[in-house]
Image (tube, rainbow, N blue to C red; front, side):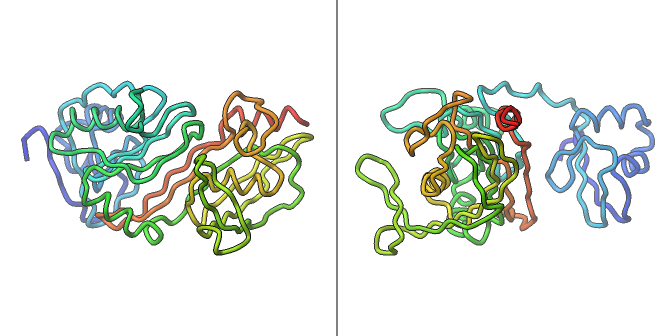
Length: 294
């Protein structure tokens, strides 16, 4: 490994800054705090900037003494996490996940592919799952075909939870519940729901009421299965479609977008086997919409 980097193994439980001060005492406290704050320290492949991260014996700490290049500028997405195998983003509403053969617009995939190609020669970018254009929130990508194949093949076991928040039209009375149906896609590319198993693939969505107003309800939804447009169809089945979702029966569009946000994602890392958990706050427009109802 180049002298500009140094990796060491933790032998006793301690905080990250304390470990750096002990291991690299000659560098001085000011420099070590600057290096840590600048994001030049990673533990087990994950970048940290906090001083109080708890280390345990066996952890691998990598320090880069060269300042990191400026953060990339993306359009309508934020990079939440990356390592040598995976990448997690927060996609904004309005950004297409990946273009079809007939489209040539800027997508999340195209931006991230170019970024990985420029920063990690030899690596690529591979689609694992998608979000609808007007749905915002967390997305997971792979950096190799092997990792992509592993994630897709073991999806049901690897994904621990996928949590969404949505603003639904009307007032949902039940505090929580489960929606179960069978979904199939029509030739018009619209998903249809049926109570009969012969009519499609099993889809299960769990929901919990977070806040309700006079005309809208804020819901938290957990996917047990991951069918196309599943949440949108299931809320339509409840007669409480997602606000802004004209395709599935919404009559209003109060915030100029689909009020659906992928706010939580937890999974087992396909290479290290470690638990990876990501959470995003409820979009301010969602909260404001419900608060305005009071």
